Image (cartoon, rainbow over all chains, first blue to last red; front, side, top):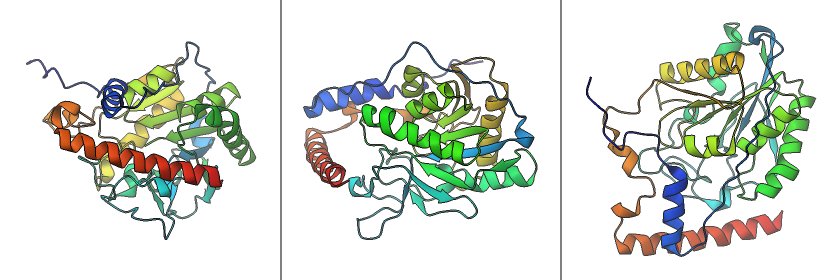
Amino acid sequence: MAFATEHDVPIPYMQRTRDYYLKLGYPGYRWAHFVDVPFTPLATPLARARLALVTTSAPYQPGVGEQGPRAPYNAAAKFYTVYSESTESIPDLRISHVGYDRVHTTAEDPNTWLPLAQLHQAVKSGRIGALTPRLHGAPTNRSQRVTMETDAPELLRCCRDDGADAVLLVPN
Amino acid sequence: MSLVARHLEANGLPTVVMGCAKDIVEYCGVSRFLFSDFPLGNSAGRPFDVESQASTLELALRVLESAPAARTTVQSPLRWREDAAWKLDFSNLERMTPEQIAERRREFDEIKAIARTKREAV
């Protein structure tokens, strides 16, 4: 069996981004880092569990510029508070407001960032008991303080209000 | 998003994160992580490939129900493409001309200004 090429490893995003911003003349970003990691075992078998979905994708907003496939980075499409949408149908959620890979991804198929259609299938097949009635949007505003002190507690409240037994989080 | 997962776990809700940025998620530390070695924007599977999207979700669910301890990462066996050259492109200064770097700087200033205005309006 031949060895893989040297660069065939998960992309070192922190190093790449650090070098990139330094070169652009900006101070380095400090990523969140912890030694301890909380862990809660799954108490309910998935076939009986109610699953919540949390996404970083943003509701489409008319009038704030391009948000479709191949749209350039669109900061005007960002959101700054937690939002909720029904999971009964598929809401129009986009990713133009985040730094996805614009060279190798066109953002044409929402199923690559929002696995809601697949979750509907999983409910139908009995793989999971149910979905919560709402999915929830987590803001990506680069303030770790706001995320920890405001957004995360709000998302916890939302998931609890919806009776979630477990949560699937999909960052982009 | 990892910060949110941690908060939910600390308050009694089991979580699983589906994502493409392995170093960032693991540096923060989450309980369960399904890593897809795909370009950012494809955490839930390959575009227009329902089979890949179904298997990505199924793996995440298996991680959710079977992870034995915190910091469990499982890597999806799916490959974006056979040639790994795409991994060299993301924000790689070695592949940019000085003009492209200057253009990126201008764009970044613009983006920051828009985000600031929006944030202050909330």
